[in-house]
Image 1 (spheres, rainbow, N blue to C red):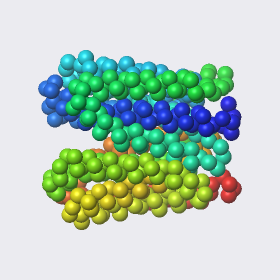
Image 2: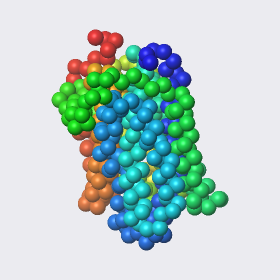
Image 3: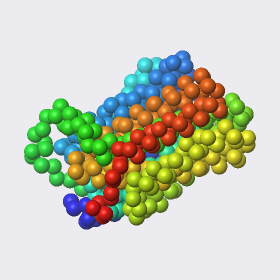
Length: 397
């Protein structure tokens, strides 16, 4: 299928599918710690259960992203969504902490078949010079779903019982599968590509780092990911322990940040298509460390919410630029491989950001932790700027 023909219908299906999936995943975010504690999990086990999903997702993203270039993206996504729907029901029948851990591992592996492959599919159907708009629209669906998921999941659990959110996650995963099956045409895969060994596929994928602009696009996306990880780790601790806010107020700040990021994705995409993506991505990303520097100076819930929305503004405007540049590189080197590499780096960057934030809080205290967080984010953006030197969008070449 030409990426210039009928891409809007396919993009709409991808957006709704990503929204449904992200909302379903968000359903269980506020429930897992309680569920794990009910099954006798220690603090260390709860940490492992939470880390299992992103860790295994990061490992397998490159595998399935690259394989989607050879086996077909619709096929890989369908397998992942089917697994997600089944695993969601598995949480209902878990009776031990080990069961929860195993389910989160499987969930991470299935997730690796969905998000990077969906972004690769969107990248392939993007018309030239509209990459930012297409990727921003896709991300809007994902951010919006994940924003509302925790709130809706908590309400479901309170009103209808603890198991209902898991049923709902399974139903939404199945809905996403149906949309993919009905509205996404399978793209043609050459016989030559099908015959390539998986080991060679992975070697070629990691080999993409030898291209400076590939490394630069990944570095820009990873810098935003580090900021996300730091924000997610420090905000609940600062809000509740230092400022005395309730869990609900902290949750509102997180939701406000996510909603601003979601709403601004299409706008960020249009800016990325109109102006030089390197500068749009770098300058808008600077709002994130600025927000970190402002957090220790906030005294009220309203001020903290405003800073959270400022950070969301940075996310919303920068991510489409980074992903549009990744799409450009994917057209040269393989869309699935590029998006798998990009998503893997983002997941690892979030994990690194979480560790940096936590360690800095223990060693330096709240104020200095945010200063260090800002410094780390700026350093990452400096690396991205150096790697992307000389970048020009295709329409200027």
